[in-house]
Length: 190
Image 1 (cartoon, rainbow, N blue to C red):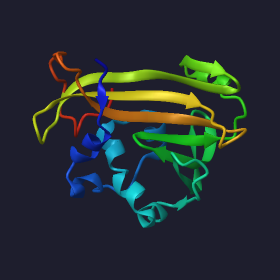
Image 2 (cartoon, one colour):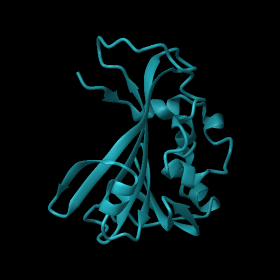
Image 3 (spheres, one colour):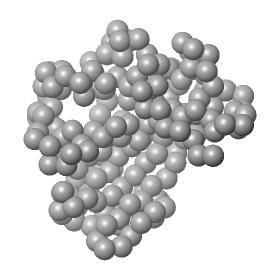
């Protein structure tokens, strides 16, 4: 039985005060999968309130894709060796929207596995972290996962989306988690 994705657990793992305790978000680290679920959870208040995004120097953009909240950055960042001033958040993912017409060279450089490559569409990714954790609040066993991905999408022709998905999953029914490596709310990936 597949694991059930529970993105709301991400935000429930932290109290509202802790979720936005540090307004200095390390955006390149989040996009490049160099942080953990709790770091990503700190974006919840930003995604929920456009004024918090503006305070960080992000300008909310009209939705060009119904599945993504997009932002233009006042100060460009460097991710995966490329300059980016356009980012998007979708569910438990954050990506940079790069001026790269072909995503394949970046996917190859990042040593990603190709999941789909047909009809001008590429989806590639690699799980960088999968570990058992215990929710510090509830004591529930969870699986923390961090996945790096590169893709393209019809709503953004000539662009490459590159970034990270952070999730907490409940183990499949009947699947016993291994000894947990730490609390879900305070363990970034190694």
